Length: 156
Image: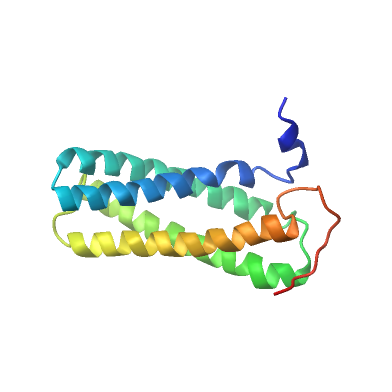
């Protein structure tokens, strides 16, 4: 039914795009709510943040589950997989903290709002770096599927 998915080694590639889009959307909406002083944007940002946090938890869980089975050389694991894992676990930690903060001070914290926004943007930066490592594994070393012979050794 899904011929493109037949080459996938695990479910991780199917779920990772949701937190990327949702968390970036939440950041955009929170910044817009702050700049435009619109409660409707803050409520939307809150809902998108919660959905992004849930989808991030699923993406991290599927990534951790897939880690041992993915076909990568030891050099690629060291130079790409480990930094990817570290960045995404850091993203999950920051996202969890921000989501709990937003739930407690729903929908947009008034106390410490600049810090909330700074941490949100920092989370997006960490997530982007982590996603770049993941993208390199997939596109440079075929970590997402079985279309190329494995393992491919790391090169700069």
